[in-house]
Length: 246
Ligand SMILES: [Cu+2]
Image (cartoon, rainbow, N blue to C red; front, side, top):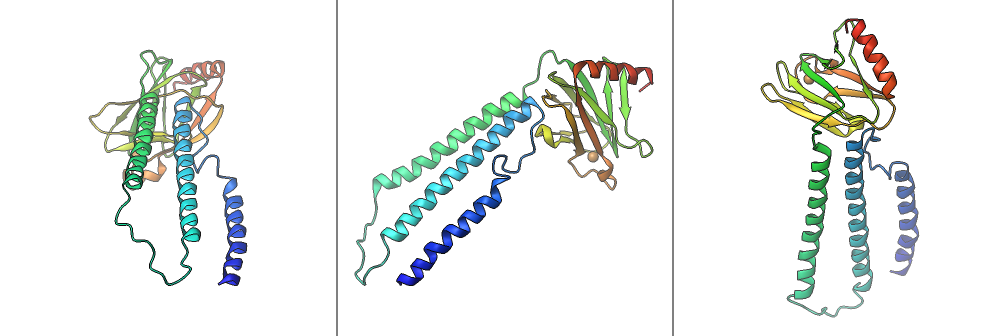
């Protein structure tokens, strides 16, 4: 018995350390994209909190299991003490998960309310139309309209940093889904339903966007890009695009 146990005590820490080190580079985000909007930050924080809560519960439970395995190992052939029940422990292990789930539920609802809130006075409005198989982005206040075609390729959505952008989402034919992974939100475009989404970009850069609902054979063509720029650069771009009849 002894030598085998000694071998395990050497192997387990080595394997455990290797797994931890391998996971370290992705550990902080737990696989989520880097957020590029205020709403995305909120969702990202919720996601990371969930993941850390899962890690804490997992470690605690693993510790309990390890403790029981070692502490109550069979040492002889005596029949162990037979307890039909243990009321305090049963109450504890019923109440603890309920409390954890209730807390996670509360955080989810408050984050959802904050991330999906619609501003009364958005700074920029973009009317998004999804159709088989491209996007039309219209900025009514700036007089700009961009449409993706097989010749021109996918359109580029240009957004000013730090300003609230209202996306009005409309589908022309079938269901599509507007998705920019770095905003950590996606919203369906459904014929006959007016959906809206507010995004406040907070990081400069260019991000990929796509349709996240299979909408027919050329669904894969429905890619686009989002470029987040400074406010004055946005104004200059919008003036140029309006002049160009965009
Ligand atoms: Cu689509």
